[in-house]
Length: 235
Image (tube, rainbow, N blue to C red; front, side, top):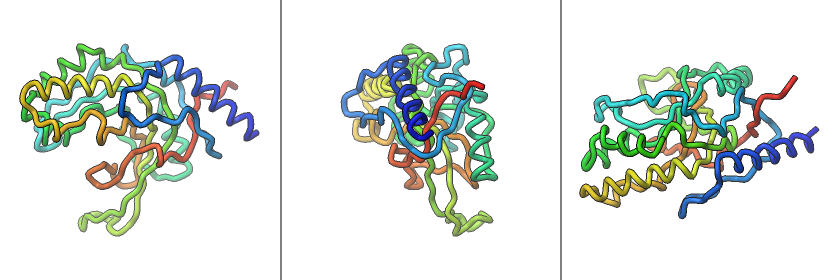
């Protein structure tokens, strides 16, 4: 059984790489070609396909309240089965009821990019490069944790987890590189925004108390993978 599961993961990974493209972006840590964990989670549709039929969803809120950022919106229904499987095992978990890959994070825009570009200018760049049509490959199901320190939280002092799908997408790094070029061309400080550093493309599935971010010293790297991911099994 384990051998057949490993073979299935390897086969899916190979097909996914062929589908979404495997052109490496210089300097980007390579994603595992396949994973070999004991547990496997299944999604509804082929996530290696991009989401061009889903409209781009703008976020142009107050940057100081982390309201301005850029995301690739994903079909929530395709990842809902994985959330349900995780919730049954590790729950209760909270889901946001939607799915996306953050491409430009709120802190990146607030502390760097907005000093040279407006959010509308950033959106013009990512839309020019067909953000919603950018393919990606799901690599694994991952989890990260930190200890809650907020004194007002009922979970203060408790280590809590967030669960996500880590993805690989040279195209998303390439789009971030175009934003970086425009940022520098408009006088932005190159040391404040790097298209590779700190970018961990993922789809958040759910969490126990709250999501964790790099600002919390929680990094969604491939080292946090704990389960395989495959398309839904055929009955």
